[in-house]
Structures are given as C-alpha cells and as structure tokens.
Image (cartoon, rainbow, N blue to C red):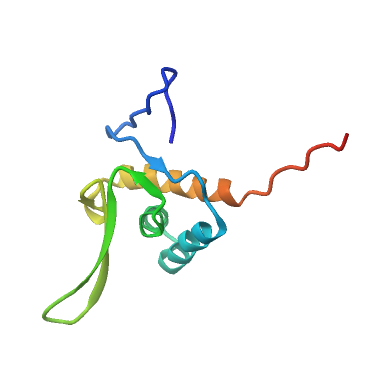
Length: 122
C-alpha cells in the first residue's frame, strides 16, 4: 500500500506489507460494502474486524495471502465463516493488527467511493 523512497514496499510494524487491489470498480466496492454492512457492529474493535474481513471476502487483499472458509460444527450444525490473514485466523490476531489493517481497508473503500473535486473550467 505504501512505498519507501527506494521504491520497495514499506514493511509495517508487524513485519508485513499490505497490498490492496488498486483498480476498484463498483462491483468491488459493493462486494466489500455488503460484507461490511452485514458484519458491522457498534464496538470499535468489531468495526475494524468487519473492515478487514470484508476486504478478505471481497478479494481486495493482494498480499499477504488471505482466505475465508465456511465451516459447520459437526455436533451442533452451526455454520460459521472464518477469515485468515497471512495464515492466521483473524480472531487470533492481535487487536492492534486488526485495527491497523481494518483502518487501511476502510480508508481504501472511502478513497474508492470519493467523488473527485471538479477541475476549474478553462
């Protein structure tokens, strides 16, 4: 998502380089927003997690590797969707990690839907 002066990707405080899809189209924004809206909660930690998980499910994260899966508890039949970020279950990540990546995904959504300022007519 960010570059250092030498052109190489900047490593974040957790030793990762988050790369988000750059060519966001309406279908991509809608996919992120549907997941986010369904998962969003009023607590800040839940909101950040919803942002990150929406980006995982919508396919916005190019690196590190991310995936999601649906699982069913064999005893209860309860279905659950699990999200993995860089091989780690999002629920098992540090809250500060989820906060950082969730904020970046939210900002990416905001930038994608922002209406550009009109240029002055010549």
